Length: 173
Ligand code: IMP
Ligand code: MG
Image (cartoon, rainbow, N blue to C red):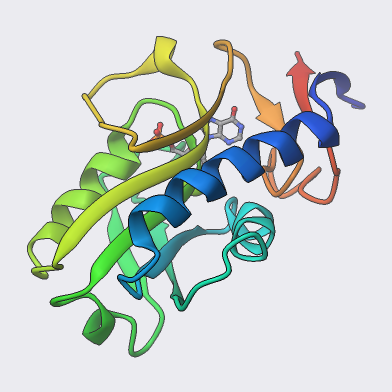
């Protein structure tokens, strides 16, 4: 069955948001040589656009969260790329997410990372769906607020579909 997609944010609105977030991040991390830790897979396009707006030394790493059982319940496990863990201790770590929904994924990951003793730990998310929050999560660099709807595009998927779309859409079900 074909999904009906309605545009929510155009590529121009997204680009403006990425520019704003990059300016905020630049101001705080200019001399800190941060590690940007992107959560796969949804944040890969956001990360790619974001770092091209950052004109100072930084590193990138990737992390993947796997959940047990079905759905998006993120009680699961953190899988870091080999070597990524050694980059956390004593470093200024900025987690880069595509969306904060219930907040369970981010809360779990931040808690895990905090125990690895970073010099500082902050969260940047392109989108925020506050109506569905189940745990409090502080988003230090917050992009676009989304309604309680399922969104796709700009790296964000529905069953691995639609990641390649340059704009962000609501899936009407
Ligand atoms: P959480 O509920 O904040 O833990 O988010 C869990 C994960 O669910 C996110 O990282 C996304 O991968 C996914 N997710 C939540 N809302 C959406 C959506 O509207 N579209 C696509 N994926 C979503
Ligand atoms: Mg995600």
